[in-house]
Length: 168
Image 1 (cartoon, rainbow, N blue to C red):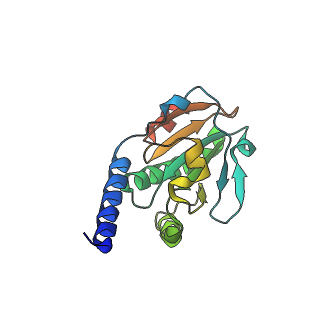
Image 2 (cartoon, rainbow, N blue to C red):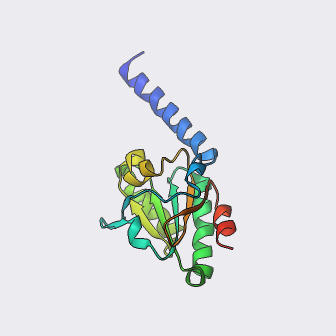
Image 3 (cartoon, one colour):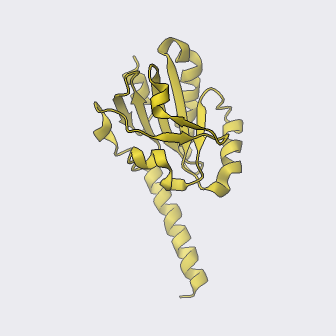
């Protein structure tokens, strides 16, 4: 098998793995009831925000990728929820794209296309080597974490329903 053929096979296998990971739920239930990990988010505009800076608010962190259609639908629903209930719930949503750097335009296009302007967007371009992704030990996408104003993880899972349940 030539080097080009091996590269194509690895690309197909990587895409299949990513799609499978997208289809599975989050494996990050072990955070529930524990303090959220210390991490910083590299925001889409290049600034950084530490999770600790958001203390005093309910925070939802969702990890997603442009290749995961289900994660995009979860983000659309969470964006609508934030628009309707953000103020009363004292809620901040950080959407962390774990796409590679060359996908930056795709990330921006997706945010613009779905009008996801209510939430804040993080993008390091480091793929699954993203600091926040590794700190939360995310297993698959989407991964949703609900964090209390005191910094305790109230709920986690692979759907927006964990947010509605935790913030009733």
